[in-house]
Image 1 (cartoon, rainbow, N blue to C red):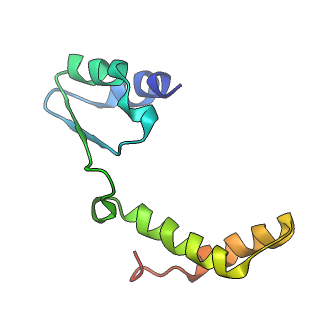
Image 2 (cartoon, one colour; image 1 turned 60 degrees about the vertical axis):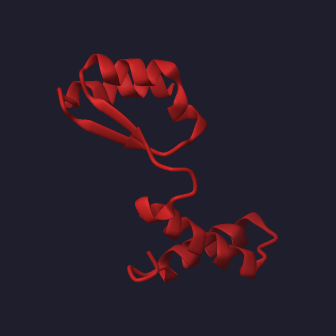
Length: 95
């Protein structure tokens, strides 16, 4: 679970005054997540919805998906090849 990940991987690394920033994925919105973070005296901040400027990976995936739509892969093999090609085509400037 996401809560388990927070407890095992994140909690040991945060300290009082730290700030965790998350997007609005449903899994991130649980009250338990907020409680876990706040009991360590850290802050939890959620990004505004639909704000790729704060999360460059969104621009990356947007470019990859646009390229895949153009390829119109119809087989699993073509899809995998298309993903590999699309990921190689995205440049730092695109992000």
